[in-house]
Image (cartoon, rainbow, N blue to C red; front, side, top):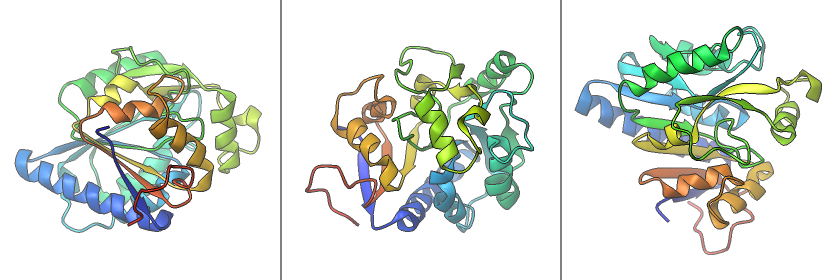
Length: 251
């Protein structure tokens, strides 16, 4: 398969290694083109990665244009689980990125998906940062994911496993509080990025990692599609890689 898998000792090491890789890719793109377009993931799995990335030296963040993968429908930006708030707190304010396109799911999700999607398609995406859900989702494309849609963003229904993960991570107090829908970047749009860097730590992701990277490439394991991309790297820690076949070196 095309996919590169790197396994580090723990989630801090995985996040730092992924950040070093990402920072170097950003420097290369900016040097070659004068600018870089990125897609940023959110969620608890990205904490260590974004902390390290925003501290990386020599990245001209004023030359970076940012899109994000997904956002809940109906959730205000002031809510602690808002991905707009997450990106403001953990990426934009730390780097002083000035070019960013938010998915506002509060009033007209379909209109926002179309508008931001049109902006996204105007130029190629250099790097997409991603995570993988406990149910194998990529962005908020829960199984069975739509592998065929050419739209850049979709309004999707979130399955119970996905919504329960948000509760378990502490973003919501109970399942009923988690929005039932979200705006999500489509699978095909994610694959349009020139490079994909996915950060997937922790034991709770181990089953999804095994299913997506050792099972069939299938809409039932959405992140398995990463194996078809020409330039994708997944960073795991020992816990998330614990169910993979032996013989993979930990670095």
